[in-house]
Image 1 (cartoon, one colour):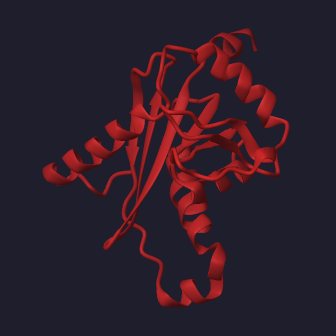
Image 2 (cartoon, helix red, strand yellow):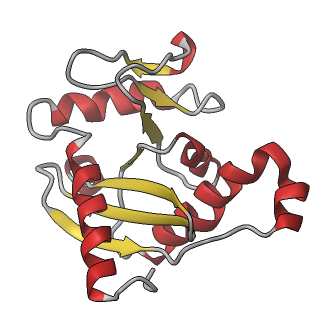
Image 3 (cartoon, rainbow, N blue to C red):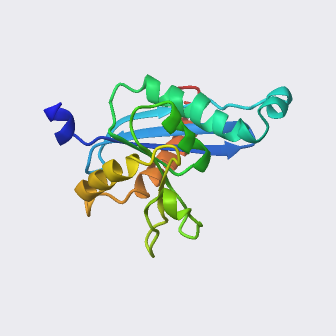
Length: 175
């Protein structure tokens, strides 16, 4: 247990919605933002029957259950905190044992009860899953350890760039 209190690996999950479907990228970094592992999902395109049956829950199901959970499960490196910039992926917290936080856009409205850190001029608010209020204190402690060492928004730019490069190279079926 002592090692896990010293180690702080972060997972960054984004899900892009494109014409070919939803495509996820998952980057695991150390506390300084150095990459430890990267995974890319295949495109997930819900069919019409799924759209009807899942209704308003479809986006969360695709982003959190199908893409997010699969990428996390296939990754060998354990994380202590998972950050997503895809609101629908916040439901991944229902499937994993570590806190999942949503880095909202700068101009996003946030429910005060779910806000871990309000937005400022540099970044949007950080939100936790509403069903896990205890995550707030744990996440705040981890964020204090990160102070000044990593911009939480920056890894998402790297993930998107890596996805673009993987497509260019024809490596888009890996997860």
